[in-house]
Length: 412
Image: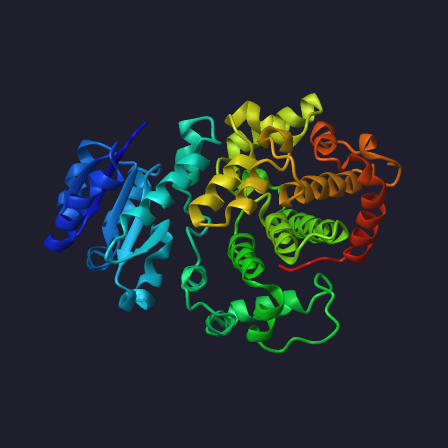
């Protein structure tokens, strides 16, 4: 495994501090240090790095050329921008070229957490081609600019719903989308919400975070002409419906508010990996043909063609973006929850059940189902293990009601 990390900074004192501290925090890693973009490009011409940390001022001065070279030639590399807090507004202009941001002075323990988290999720993928495809993805946002601001606010000890509401209000398009979402039948509120501040307070920060990614990823995505039968609109509607049902299942099981929000968030994002896979249209078309010819599910066909499914790919991408771990794990294992070996009811349970129930309804199998064994795609071993298999008697009518109430679901 590549354990090389490159720091690019023209402040000699900053580089020296990192040099002195690196071995204590990263004892198994080899550090390289470049005082300019030119020096960094020379090093990148000789070898690849697992992580490259670039000072914001260097990235800004050379118009992100270094980051774009990394994206094109070394898409598997994790790209991090280090910036002083005073540069926050300017940093947002180059978010598509970077995966994560760090405040200066760099806290190596924070960087280590980011790296370990992303390397752990990378293990979900089975081949280097998919790692390169996911890490180097360009058509999906590496992070929408506003998302970074929200993420920073979430991570701040002084973070507040009021400030996040103000951030949303600065983006006219996102304000319209958030108000559209919160006032839609999807959330079923009894009163009209008029301001983004009110919407944020009602949605919660985790759900808002998922909606920001959803809005940018789904609403702006273009499908290759070879995949003319692939509908982003249909995929987005499915994702929202799974999220709503997952939230309802959590509520039915008297889960706390945080689990309801995790379930909704994971449902909204559970199939986002498909937007990565369809960027390889020939392979994705091969997977669709494989599925149709053998009568197997799409995700099994993806394993055959890509070596991993949209679930693992989506989880890795969300992990790279900093989505909370319960949501990432729910996305990663939503088809086969027993592989995670968790023995409690959580977002993984609600997403797995909701996805199977929605798929069964789409295929016309839900109306005739009387128990869990009648629902294709359910991991019966897992449901038995956590003591929820018999709950299907309650979940089936709940699912029918949620799907009836959401017949005209449309948010993009």
